[in-house]
Amino acid sequence: MRATLFVALLCALAGSLASAAVDTSAWVGRNIYFIVVDRFVRGQTSSSSEPCDGHDWCGGTISGITEKLPYISAMGFDAIWITPIVKQTPWLDNWNGTAYHGYWASDFYEVDPNFGTPEDLHTLVDTAHELEMLFMLDIVANHVGPLHTLDDVMNLGPGLNDPMGAQFHQDPHPDAVPFADYLLDPLTMMEAGPECWPYYTFGPDTCDFTTILDGWFGDLGDLNHENPDVQTYLLDWIDYMRSTYGIDGFRLDTALYIPPSFLASFQEAADVYIVGEIVTYNQTLHASYQEVLTGVLNFPITEHIKTAFSSEGDLSFLGDVLVTQNQPATGYKDVHLLGNFVDNHDSDRFLFNHTGDVLQLKNAATFVNLWHGIPVTYYGTEGGWGGGVTEKSLSEMGEFLKALNDIRELAGFRAGGELVRSEASVVLANARYLAFSRGALLVLVNNRGEEGGGEDEVCFDVVEEWQGASWVAVMGDGSAVSDGSQVCVTTESSGPLVLSPVA
Image (cartoon, rainbow, N blue to C red):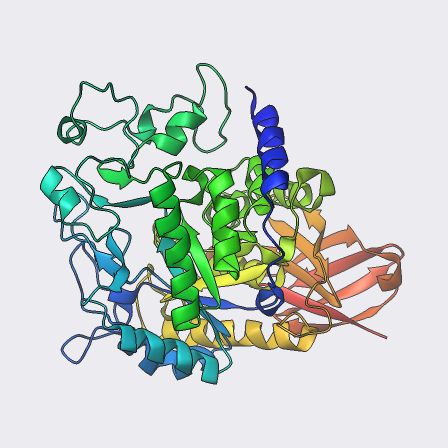
């Protein structure tokens, strides 16, 4: 079937399975600082001022994060998201290395000793709450860690270690083929056919959604969500994690590869905000997952940020995508619960791909923080990671992120703010500039970078109440004058410019 028909069926299915309303109000307007536990604070014998590279354990701990919460709070962040901390599969290979990242679960109910103890997790959550920060835990419900033999299966935790393998998808698996043999050559999602990534065009000879749901990520055992025992295990576990540790929200890894019918039940059992990882450019498909989850990470936007905010990029395409996302027909239930970000742990850092151009990073970060939705900042961004760590970049980016959070506070965009649910609207998008209005702010970002600086002028139409207004710069170097129905902005550098009208 074509993608539009598939999405219509998904929405109809989700509508019949929609969970009871989950109170997400506490998350609207939050600004999340995202941490990879093993790589953040690495103990007394290792410096935490430089990135830890490679695929081995670095020694970061839950308690180390607790120690750094005042540092995170001082930058203006009022929520943290940490990578999974459940017990990991002790696998080592030449390509992926170890399970330092936390996405290779072996026992969902245990805390991996490399990260710390259950008491450490309690302390982290409690301390975050004392600082009026919300706590989000990354979780994986699609798969477990690498499995190659029946011994690997039987070493998993109780509820996951049936040697017959009923807890895992085994398609296509003729009855005559033992599970031990299937482990040597499982069906993988890479066999789903052409046109899956990133737009997901479904139908014959395009993208087989059954393989997307049932296929394995290489050697990672794909959980069978149609199996009643698996359903009970996961639903009981998510309720246990939320109620035991007081968790405020979850980030759900690989949510696109889990049946929507189960996602609805999972969201209901969690009973808190879940933001799902739905990696696709297909906005209609992406939006459909807000029928079963409260939120989704905004990949249709984020996947274009790194290219749009480069000297060779084109911000007009990003503007078109933003306009489409704002249209009710696209299907998003609540754009304020979308997670927007520049960097994450699955790709190279922004500065690495932009030859260390801090001005381009500042423009991208300004867009993410002042556009509607929940902004997410990847740890180390404040230190210029990816473009060379220096004292200057640490001070410069850290202070810049704090300034953006201060603007969000003054503009009423933060949690509890008067304009926290105000929506942004694109007023200009061309190759070099993107301008949008939100609340009482007019934001102009660009992709000129450090080598494209100098004075420039750009003009565009604005809403009627702003015609003839005077303007003051809240951030950046520049000015604006109104000329009839237009505003002409003069920039004095290639940094971002944030303006507010003055009566």
